[in-house]
Image 1: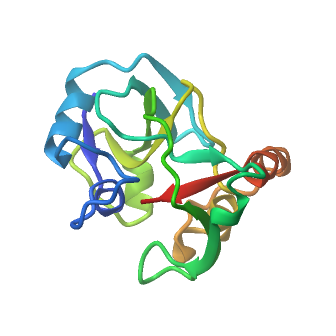
Image 2: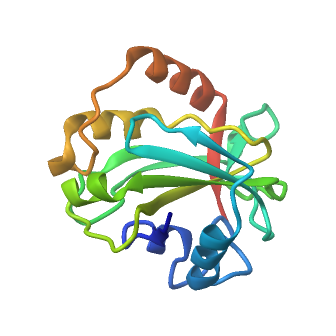
Length: 185
């Protein structure tokens, strides 16, 4: 099995101007090499048959991305409308500014099959392509954000995957993300 960092994920995980809330201490090439050489601790099923999650112990100083919202940090929440790419519609997002989260214990790599990536217009020369990564305290999936689930249901033409909305998964996502937010450094 071969794994490749996709053009979609590369600028999010390894931006040209490094940010504290992205993968630290390694290059994209070192990240890719690690994924191909070091077996994951476990493999989780993703939200659709074409999606797998590879759980790795964090070998970097990358920090947890999702932080619980408390009375002591709620004032640090910010929000704005943003798009992940120039082609996508902006959606409402929120995040913390001014927090120092703990170092993540796990990096959970989100993989899409070569066939799904081709359907979405990304041809890769590997079996699986990295489309994202979760930086977590636990070796379990962080629920997909509700807006990502909605975008996926809108279809490939709107930046999604074309997977219909699962109301139960959506409700679990809302429950988690009501109590957590990402952070930016």
